[in-house]
Length: 121
Length: 359
Image 1 (cartoon, rainbow over the protein chains, first blue to last red):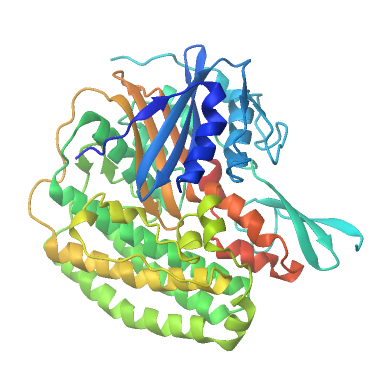
Image 2 (cartoon, rainbow over the protein chains, first blue to last red; image 1 turned 90 degrees about the vertical axis):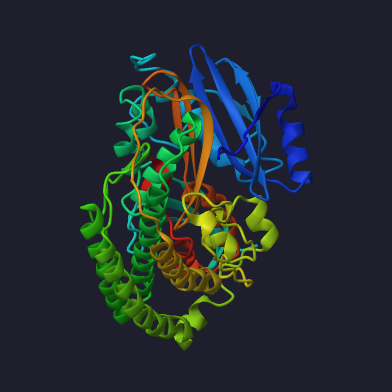
């Protein structure tokens, strides 16, 4: 049986408040992940409490700056540095900012380019 | 304040099987700050979803890691099946659970050997790896592969296990249980081990939770987080309790893995007794259209495969959050305040898998 999972769209301005609220409600940070959808980037913040996931999605452009939630969740720095290094999205205020050296990639921001837009149906 | 010096630890270091770099800021012999660096073996495997069809990609998902390879493939296909609403045959779910627990056994024995070896405990190292060979032999006999099994597929599994072989596996595990008890007694009750591990690298329950610790790293700090409790595969029909320790130190994290091996054996035994007859796979048509966070419990903790499809044969995104990746922030906290000589032991106590972490 499929576990019901919903991802709530929020604005960039709500990211930190949602993170602080999630922590206040006793959630742990499960992951932050980015997905390139055509010219946009979807970033999903996932929290968990008692095996129930709460997810928030923001949609940004590559030039947009997103706020760090490392103030609420110290461990967010690994995800935020990854998003910066693989997608080129700037994250403001990371507690441990590697400034692009977290991953050593042969080309800059390799995941910001789509190799094949779509496969055959 | 003493003068601060920075010492590089890794990426090549005798206790590290894989490259992880830590800049240790020291005041005398005490670590006051740690800056971790990974990225030496980043392969960008997730990007290959754009080139491989979702049915083929399971082989890539399985190659994310050479230790928990089967569980990666299981997590991936489970996510695809959830999106497509596939009801996988029950026998296949039991087989996946059996192979998943075999993977946990071989991973924990691998870790036990490496950990003991790093401390000069050669007899435990050799005996742990001797026992691990039995596990790998069973994996090879039932799947065809010792490290990469290649047996999971969308809609089920590629191979079945005969009742005779299941009986043989059961007998093998029973006899291994005694040897494991002896090995654990030597490892956990040795005064040198206790002296070296107790009270070292303590992670509080609150820190473990909010820093994102998972697996034995979390359970060693009183956090009963074990994704197997969600009942994926056949685990919903199996009785087991997560092993939890309360001291939060290196010894607690080691004890978790030592005791978890018996839980895995118990789960396999229950599966073998309960496994129903029937098919092991189903015909799959179409392509996934939707998104899902598929979660399972790897030997090192919760792994998440985020899968997004748009109804085409190539996925839009496959993103893997591995347990070692989320155990890095707790590791940084564990190391702050420790003695330089304790760093190798603390690092190995989280059982880091960098190949997994970097994908």
